[in-house]
View 1 (cartoon, rainbow, N blue to C red):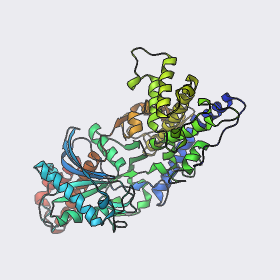
View 2: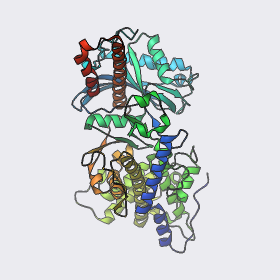
View 3: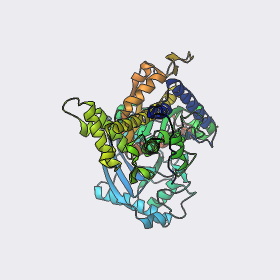
View 4: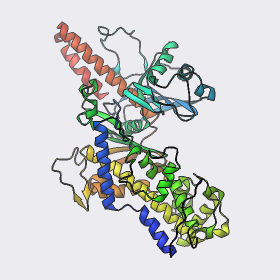
Length: 551
């Protein structure tokens, strides 16, 4: 594997200054990146086939915490599958019961029907073990007077949301074709088929009263989960191993849907941005030789550019590339007296957790929290210990000055990630009419009033970076303030989304069930209008859609 090129400079200060300058993103560039982000959002909303795909999810309503009921979630995405029962209490709280089941290699590579039968068996086992395999639906979601237009047996079924962490082309809330398997899965006769239908067929073969009503992306799940627990949310974002965002968009802005039925059925829809693929051309992103090397040696060169600048999977590798270049610097090495290690010499040898540990040591938090503030020398001693242990270097090759240089590298790379992350949040706030972009402290010209001006703006986040990396949210907020101004930034309520792939999937099942019931209600109503039977039941009927909207 080729190493990062060595650096030649007259002085060490020149080299370090050059490295840090390359990693800096000034306010002007931050603004330009945000504008490019918006343009790629608009491209994806208008047409299919863009890297930033802006996928319509067909989720057309958002929980507000008042919903009640019990819903199931099935989460498949790796070695284990997880079945969850989520009981929504109606007061922004919920209780969760879950069970994990192992997916064997034989199931991963066998027939698709065998795999999906196993998924159904796992749900059946979960319900049987619980002793109460009946769904507790709120009264407003119970079936009412639908027999006139439905041939289905009037037996309550349990709504289930499926979190399916593989590439799918979603065409409806409860429909999506598998594009390809990843993560070691290769089940036969699945690619090109609707995964919801494959699962539902398995339930039906076993005569289970379970219906898969929603196919869920974990980012959408984060949005729904945070909306339920906080009373509202417009953006769900993942800042972890990878990155992505989903937000609530005006249906009129999703012009690529044309005149589809979904456009007629609501004013809003959640859009899955797939923003990890933003600016794959790298025309706006601040690429350095270290970033280019990460991309070149990745499994998907030229793809997921934004993700490679800001997500936990890549920050450690960028840091390793910088460190190795300083070890190899000529005419004199600038780190560790020219010593390297097996860990530093291999791809992915430095995990982002190492950066986090270095910053914790410098900030004096976590396990490094001192009884007093701690001196600079003491902090650098802690960082030196982290470097020796995590990078497997000889102790006599790591000086306190080396520790300080590594600390500055980690800080610059994390700051850059947080600043770029703020571009995505700012773009969504602008696109939804909740912010005006500022440049040099001046707002861009826009006389339109802001949406929900003066009110809380809910943002749900999930992922290891935003949850565990020292002060990542604080750094993101500082840059967001530069882009949208202090007033808007102060109203942005960023909170952790609890279990987007579990609770979020169950909430998506609720949304799907509600949307289906409203649709059936309108079918009944049209049927009654056609037969002139609405007058005698007008009051009861007119209240029905409102109760559904509130549930």
